[in-house]
Amino acid sequence: MRALLYMIDTEDDLRRAMAVCSGRGMKIVHRRCRQELDEDIFKRGWFLKSGCRILGLGATFADRWRLTGSPDPRGKPFTGLRVHFVGTSWDVPRELHEAQVEEAGGGVVDEQEQADIVVTSNIELANLGGRAAAMIITEQVFRRALPGARLTPWVVWSKPLNDQAANIWRLFSACDLTSIQLGINLACTHPEEIDDLLEGVEVGPTGELVRGLFLSVTADFRPFLNVALLGLLSVAPDGTRAAALRACVRKIAMTVTGIPNLNGFERLEALRLTLSEGTNARDLRTFGPLPTLRVLFIGSGSHVVSLSSLAGLDAPALVELDIANVDLRDVDALARSPRLQSVNLERNQIGRAHV
Image (cartoon, rainbow, N blue to C red; front, side, top):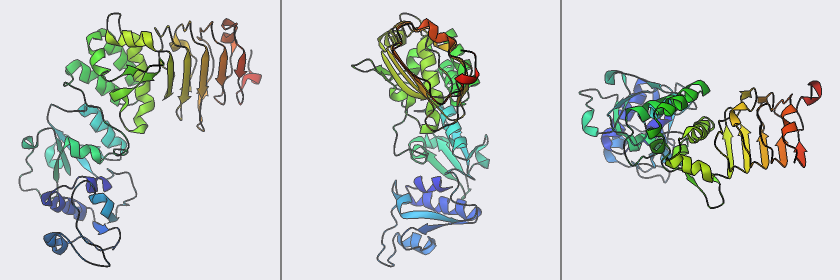
């Protein structure tokens, strides 16, 4: 529930946050003085005890105050909170906001009357009536309460996404590979939406893919959205900005959940993929032909992952290969890479497989 502390800008916000906490058996306590926030302190707007002074409404309120009580305040930031979204024009797709709430331990409700927090794209659209134990906040205030908000910028499109693009984002924001592939398939039937979805994605001066706004989300989402990003670039038809970007990419380095689609990356020279925890991939068939690829790294970091086979690897110019600790069993596809000079296949299961 500590997300509440990042949403308090006004006296009304504070009173409502106190009411929400009271309904959950929780209290707001000063971090330094351990003094409970009560109506008397609220009325004065400050207190003096052990050298501590000032209530401190605004974005830094959570730096001064913390939650105590039950349920355990050490849970995820939205644990125990029910959130309702009102409005149609969002800086970030509403579906992504909803997925972030659930990832942070909260719940999304359909009825405003059920919500502890009402997030609105237009403050005039929300009306709590006489309810005291609920808050109304803007999208901008909501963002700063999300995990990692202080560390990462956020996706802001220069124009609202239309219905088809929003549907694609809804599938991506589910953060599972089946939904992401469905989103990529939908993009294939609506290629005019791809450039809008990839707004902010660029290619750097040395050919590296720069994620830009598309990947400006909390870290937990990035391995999934990296797969979505590469998938959209792969299916972008000729004549689109996305296809022009794809043709310029020479370097890719990112963490992914699953093996991405790399069809059409005909100038790619160096590929470094770190598989996120729990990745269980069969082979590399989604890569497609990579005629200029010279360096390939696929690793696991310290995670438990699986990549059973290199089947599908079509990289005749490959010189350097480093695929370690991924439970690899089949490397027959390397016969199609006659220029290999450096190979690292440590901590795999190749010795037990037919090579």
